[in-house]
Amino acid sequence: MEDTMYTAALATASDVVSGDFCDVSVVENEVISYRQGTDGYDIPVYGMTSVVALDAVETTVRTDADNYGAAETEADDILAANGWVRTGDWEPSDNAYYAPVERADNGENADSTDTAVWSVVRGESPTSRAVEPGIVGVTVPDEVLTWAKGHGHGPDDTSVYLLVTPKDEAGEVAGEIAWREFPMQAGDIALIREELNGNADA
Image 1 (tube, rainbow, N blue to C red):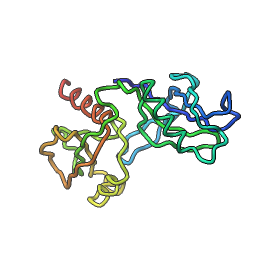
Image 2: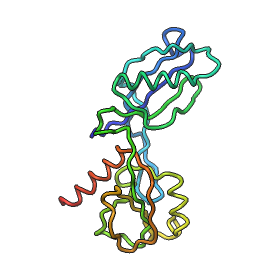
Image 3: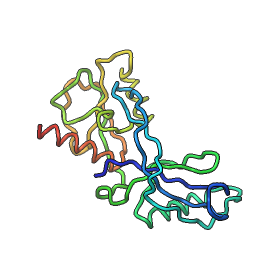
Image 4: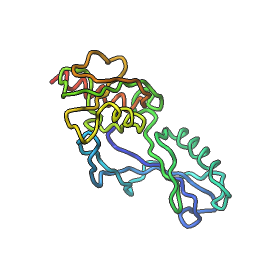
């Protein structure tokens, strides 16, 4: 599993492409700052670098098109053909769309989804087979955050924690207030397993 993060850029303006057509490329990211997550741990904030991982590939969609839906679809196909998979939505800017991507061979079925079990827990529960998402860099979905808040998780009570584990690792969690299942990308599941296995070996 790789640690490097990447961003795909779908260029849609004539001043940022070499011809008349939108193109897609991939660049490496680097950590530019940190923000505090809801669980109190620092979460890295990434920015794009000039290190190119995939040189620009032209689509068949012109930069003066009325909309870029077809360009997004074609960009996804180009990425897949070159060994990349998009892991988030295309986000628009003035002259391009950007999306997080990872190598398609970054772990088995990296573009698939699996199931995670989230637990709201009172106390740290050190013996449970679960981790705090911020430790491994897993983003908590908004729906899970809202659910966890409804069970007492939040800045007003620092004794209540939010833990997560792959479904097949889920078991008894001391101090558990509530739990639920929620889909998770296979790559994030792999990060959690790595942390769990590291703790087991320690």
